[in-house]
Image (cartoon, rainbow, N blue to C red):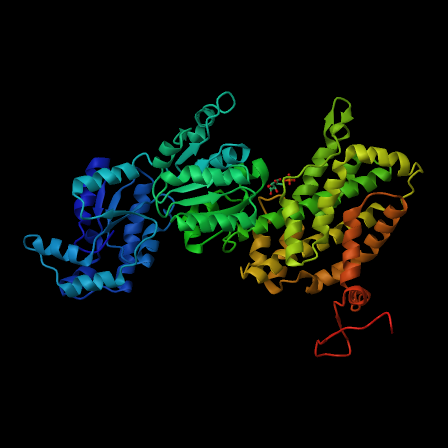
Length: 622
Ligand code: 6PG
């Protein structure tokens, strides 16, 4: 593509000979009416061009199913290219022949028998919308040089690079390859432990036949089409920074790095700014679904500059899970590190969902059930409380090793990789009461002190027989209540961050991309998609108000019984305590304010003074 006179036909024909591909000149496909108009010196308008562009698109689709072809067409406007690209956007490559006005005018006028008026050329430049995802070629180069450059770019160059072939990197690579993308795969070389990782991985899977494996950075980078798109799948933390610095010397302006790890959202913003100063784009993206999700379709939460996202959108959407309407579970989240922020809160919600199931297990155990019986009970819960985490918990409860349940052999110290910790920090920084996430996190921390716990149990653990007076039905209702509060708190944290950082996040879209592919997918999440279309505050939604009211007696009963029986249920208890603290018109914070004013003269406001004025009292002498 490019303006008239830029040399498209010459280059196109030469390239078709070199690549042994059919060549088509767009001008040969105009309908009679257009030809007539042009021969009468009348310019074509968008309506005239539409049918012609669709004809060229059909031609491209037909040849993309065979061995491809080369088409030249001015395609000056983005809307023209959008038509030309229909159905083949993942398989087409644009070449923009670029030259200045004077340069082109001179070239044409130097050609024997050709003349182009300044006016005609000006009109072409006026409507030219430069493509941002094309191989740009300076037409002052010789045709041979141009062909040489294009061959380098088009032959054996990959569409997408995957850096880091750990569990997630490998699964995403296979997913990308299955979607027809040509990949370059990189894994570092560490003598003795990580040798020929990319090469061995490629030879293991048929779908990677066209992928190129590397353990050296420079050839890996050079194997990619420009602007390069490289997804980093390395451990979150300082490793990302050192990888970025290793890559930088080999990258060119407008290349795109995508961080698909669980990075801290503040670091993502810093990296975005740093790379921007170097002319490199950065997309921070949450990826959820674990190993299987990455392979079969994860939920993807990308953020950064929207126009840059557009360039990686076809790749991410192709590999993402699909929702009930077959739409990709991938959506542009917002600017800066918002993608990693929402992934962090996703994990916070995940921590709570896991903890609630652990507490259900504690209570059902106290009711005298063995793991397989608990699995049987939970199986019935699928009808009203189905979720991915409920399903995997059922599988876990059924897993046996020799003659005992494997669960009984697992050390009760819960690990974490930091996202729950960051979510709690973010909540405190934003001043948002995400009490269930912090409670689930602290439950993991509590578990970690195994030796101290064993010692404390000798002094304090009750040896009395448990006498838990709750039915399975009541427990299920309490569980449903706690999950609603968990989702309310999680989405509320996201909304407050969106307000503070002016991210204008779309909670309904977020709930939608969490309906499949991710760890917290559930029927409840499906139900929240329409809720968030009408409000950002789910506990003001009539159906949810009614549900909370209906379920509340059950959680009060369950928490009371569990506390009387000394069962650890911090998340269940936090759920009802949160609502008890939040849903009160007049709280005990008046006493806190008075205490603060007493010892620190921190002042307080009065309910009988609407001006909001701050008062101080000399408490001791009054
Ligand atoms: C996911 C998971 C995944 C992982 C987290 C949580 O959405 O696929 O959240 O990202 O499980 O790292 O890990 P921790 O429990 O170790 O903090």
